Image (cartoon, rainbow, N blue to C red):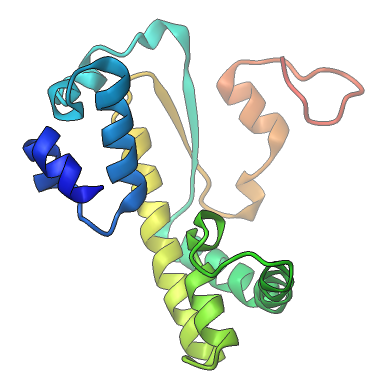
Length: 180
Protein backbone atom coordinates (compact mmCIF):
# COMPACT_ATOMS: atom_id res chain seq x y z
CA UNK A 1 0.00 0.00 0.00
CA UNK A 2 2.84 2.39 0.80
CA UNK A 3 4.37 1.74 -2.63
CA UNK A 4 1.00 2.61 -4.21
CA UNK A 5 0.90 5.83 -2.15
CA UNK A 6 4.43 6.73 -3.32
CA UNK A 7 3.24 6.44 -6.91
CA UNK A 8 -0.10 8.22 -6.52
CA UNK A 9 0.95 10.92 -4.04
CA UNK A 10 4.73 11.29 -3.50
CA UNK A 11 4.23 14.39 -1.29
CA UNK A 12 1.98 12.49 1.11
CA UNK A 13 4.33 9.49 1.09
CA UNK A 14 7.18 11.80 2.09
CA UNK A 15 5.18 12.95 5.14
CA UNK A 16 3.60 9.65 6.20
CA UNK A 17 5.83 6.96 7.71
CA UNK A 18 5.49 3.58 5.92
CA UNK A 19 4.62 1.87 9.22
CA UNK A 20 1.67 4.19 9.89
CA UNK A 21 -0.76 1.97 8.06
CA UNK A 22 -3.87 3.89 9.17
CA UNK A 23 -2.60 7.15 7.63
CA UNK A 24 -1.41 5.36 4.49
CA UNK A 25 -4.84 3.78 4.04
CA UNK A 26 -6.57 7.11 4.76
CA UNK A 27 -4.43 8.91 2.17
CA UNK A 28 -5.28 6.28 -0.44
CA UNK A 29 -8.97 6.46 0.48
CA UNK A 30 -9.07 10.24 0.13
CA UNK A 31 -7.35 10.01 -3.22
CA UNK A 32 -9.78 7.34 -4.42
CA UNK A 33 -12.90 9.13 -3.19
CA UNK A 34 -12.05 12.70 -4.18
CA UNK A 35 -9.91 12.03 -7.23
CA UNK A 36 -7.28 14.35 -5.71
CA UNK A 37 -4.18 13.40 -3.75
CA UNK A 38 -4.53 14.07 -0.04
CA UNK A 39 -1.46 16.32 -0.17
CA UNK A 40 -3.43 18.69 -2.44
CA UNK A 41 -5.83 19.19 0.46
CA UNK A 42 -3.02 20.12 2.86
CA UNK A 43 -3.06 23.90 2.54
CA UNK A 44 -1.94 24.75 6.06
CA UNK A 45 -4.81 27.24 6.23
CA UNK A 46 -7.47 24.98 7.71
CA UNK A 47 -7.57 26.71 11.07
CA UNK A 48 -7.69 30.16 9.51
CA UNK A 49 -10.97 29.30 7.83
CA UNK A 50 -12.78 27.54 10.68
CA UNK A 51 -16.34 28.77 11.14
CA UNK A 52 -15.70 29.95 14.69
CA UNK A 53 -19.21 31.30 15.04
CA UNK A 54 -20.61 27.73 15.09
CA UNK A 55 -19.03 26.66 18.37
CA UNK A 56 -17.18 27.85 21.41
CA UNK A 57 -14.55 25.78 23.18
CA UNK A 58 -14.04 25.55 26.90
CA UNK A 59 -10.74 24.20 28.16
CA UNK A 60 -10.21 23.22 31.78
CA UNK A 61 -6.49 23.50 32.44
CA UNK A 62 -4.38 22.31 35.35
CA UNK A 63 -0.78 23.19 36.25
CA UNK A 64 1.70 20.80 34.65
CA UNK A 65 2.94 19.40 37.99
CA UNK A 66 -0.59 18.66 39.21
CA UNK A 67 -1.60 17.15 35.88
CA UNK A 68 1.50 14.95 35.95
CA UNK A 69 0.70 13.78 39.47
CA UNK A 70 -2.92 13.04 38.57
CA UNK A 71 -1.89 11.02 35.52
CA UNK A 72 0.69 9.13 37.59
CA UNK A 73 -1.87 8.30 40.30
CA UNK A 74 -4.51 7.29 37.76
CA UNK A 75 -2.08 5.01 35.94
CA UNK A 76 -1.15 3.32 39.21
CA UNK A 77 -4.78 3.04 40.29
CA UNK A 78 -6.01 1.42 37.08
CA UNK A 79 -2.94 -0.53 35.94
CA UNK A 80 -3.99 -3.96 37.27
CA UNK A 81 -7.52 -3.63 35.86
CA UNK A 82 -5.99 -2.56 32.54
CA UNK A 83 -3.86 -5.71 32.55
CA UNK A 84 -6.94 -7.87 33.21
CA UNK A 85 -8.89 -6.14 30.44
CA UNK A 86 -6.03 -6.62 27.97
CA UNK A 87 -5.65 -10.28 28.91
CA UNK A 88 -9.38 -10.76 28.40
CA UNK A 89 -9.23 -9.12 24.94
CA UNK A 90 -6.34 -11.38 23.92
CA UNK A 91 -8.27 -14.41 25.23
CA UNK A 92 -11.27 -13.30 23.14
CA UNK A 93 -9.08 -13.51 20.04
CA UNK A 94 -8.07 -9.91 19.46
CA UNK A 95 -4.62 -9.74 17.88
CA UNK A 96 -1.90 -7.72 19.59
CA UNK A 97 -1.70 -5.47 16.53
CA UNK A 98 -5.43 -4.70 16.17
CA UNK A 99 -6.10 -0.93 16.11
CA UNK A 100 -7.77 -0.86 19.54
CA UNK A 101 -4.71 -2.39 21.19
CA UNK A 102 -2.47 0.19 19.55
CA UNK A 103 -4.01 3.04 21.50
CA UNK A 104 -2.18 4.76 24.33
CA UNK A 105 -0.80 2.36 26.92
CA UNK A 106 -1.85 -0.96 25.44
CA UNK A 107 1.55 -1.71 23.85
CA UNK A 108 3.19 -1.27 27.24
CA UNK A 109 0.56 -3.47 28.90
CA UNK A 110 1.12 -6.12 26.23
CA UNK A 111 4.90 -5.90 26.78
CA UNK A 112 4.32 -6.29 30.53
CA UNK A 113 1.99 -9.29 30.05
CA UNK A 114 4.57 -10.99 27.84
CA UNK A 115 7.33 -10.24 30.41
CA UNK A 116 9.29 -8.01 28.04
CA UNK A 117 9.24 -5.16 30.56
CA UNK A 118 8.60 -4.84 34.29
CA UNK A 119 5.50 -3.28 35.82
CA UNK A 120 7.41 -0.12 36.90
CA UNK A 121 8.86 0.25 33.38
CA UNK A 122 5.42 -0.18 31.81
CA UNK A 123 3.93 2.39 34.16
CA UNK A 124 6.79 4.83 33.50
CA UNK A 125 6.33 4.51 29.73
CA UNK A 126 2.56 4.94 30.01
CA UNK A 127 3.06 8.04 32.16
CA UNK A 128 5.47 9.53 29.60
CA UNK A 129 3.07 8.82 26.71
CA UNK A 130 0.10 10.20 28.67
CA UNK A 131 1.92 13.43 29.50
CA UNK A 132 2.90 13.82 25.86
CA UNK A 133 -0.73 13.23 24.84
CA UNK A 134 -1.97 15.83 27.35
CA UNK A 135 0.53 18.33 25.92
CA UNK A 136 -0.73 17.65 22.39
CA UNK A 137 -4.32 18.18 23.58
CA UNK A 138 -3.36 21.59 24.97
CA UNK A 139 -1.67 22.45 21.68
CA UNK A 140 -4.77 21.35 19.78
CA UNK A 141 -7.01 23.65 21.82
CA UNK A 142 -4.67 26.64 21.50
CA UNK A 143 -5.17 26.88 17.75
CA UNK A 144 -8.78 27.98 18.17
CA UNK A 145 -9.53 31.66 18.61
CA UNK A 146 -12.91 31.09 20.26
CA UNK A 147 -11.73 29.34 23.41
CA UNK A 148 -12.35 30.05 27.06
CA UNK A 149 -9.49 28.65 29.10
CA UNK A 150 -10.29 28.08 32.77
CA UNK A 151 -7.27 27.49 34.99
CA UNK A 152 -7.81 24.96 37.78
CA UNK A 153 -4.96 25.64 40.19
CA UNK A 154 -6.15 23.10 42.76
CA UNK A 155 -8.98 20.64 43.42
CA UNK A 156 -11.12 23.35 45.08
CA UNK A 157 -11.20 25.22 41.76
CA UNK A 158 -13.06 22.30 40.23
CA UNK A 159 -16.43 23.63 41.36
CA UNK A 160 -19.05 23.01 38.69
CA UNK A 161 -21.24 25.94 39.77
CA UNK A 162 -18.28 28.35 39.59
CA UNK A 163 -17.27 26.99 36.17
CA UNK A 164 -20.84 27.30 34.88
CA UNK A 165 -20.93 30.95 35.99
CA UNK A 166 -17.61 31.61 34.24
CA UNK A 167 -18.88 30.01 31.07
CA UNK A 168 -22.21 31.79 31.24
CA UNK A 169 -24.56 28.83 30.95
CA UNK A 170 -27.37 27.84 33.24
CA UNK A 171 -27.56 24.56 35.08
CA UNK A 172 -30.57 22.39 34.29
CA UNK A 173 -32.32 21.91 37.65
CA UNK A 174 -32.72 18.34 38.86
CA UNK A 175 -30.66 16.70 36.12
CA UNK A 176 -27.26 16.44 37.79
CA UNK A 177 -24.54 18.39 36.03
CA UNK A 178 -26.13 18.36 32.57
CA UNK A 179 -26.21 21.78 30.96
CA UNK A 180 -28.09 23.15 27.97
